[in-house]
Length: 104
Image 1 (cartoon, one colour):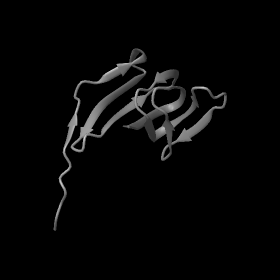
Image 2: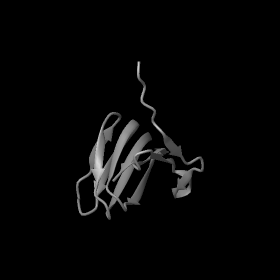
Image 3: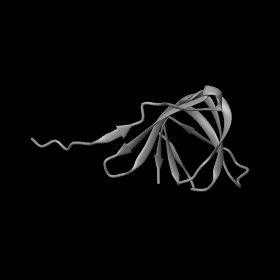
């Protein structure tokens, strides 16, 4: 039996945003890819992006509005949405949301 070893560096220091409404930890995998895992408490917040992002909703629910759009779109556990790099989005979290953010 062969097992592949996955190596990752996890930031033990939390990234805390919006007075604690969003808390995340960064992860860098051996291949150089970056992710963050975190929680967003119920709130309406605005995030900006550097690199493109894919937000994977692990638990909870939200709705988002991408920069330049008037329409809100809803997402729940098991769904994901993409945000372009050098952009922004509004997020309204209705039920505490656990997420994984994939960068790049």
